[in-house]
Image (cartoon, rainbow, N blue to C red):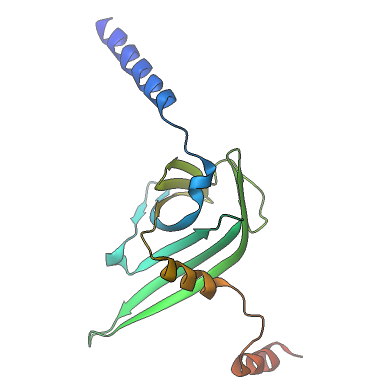
Length: 168
């Protein structure tokens, strides 16, 4: 019986601490983020970082601007390092009253949960993603976001590719 009372007291104190925590404003989402880890429903966990050579990047602008990219580095046996920024999306996001949507997809209330000013978690398909605020300079963020923006005027070779591969 004593153990039960102690367990109930610990649970009550924990619940009170959660209620006492300051709610994180949805405005805290604005800025650059890098994926920290993915936790799959089957229990598998992927922890991202410098050693893996690949990072997921997201940017949330103050006026709804949204950009996502995959960024990787490759090291050759000669020691040369190359960087690749793969734009994934550029468009808009919404985040209001816990409901999140990006790129016009259906809003969900489990797609993004700000746990503190530097961390958010979001459910996507069969995994939970953990994101951390990215300690990047404004110059770096702008460059990556600009890479994600669609080009309005294709280069000459891109014009050729469009004509040769997508014209009938």
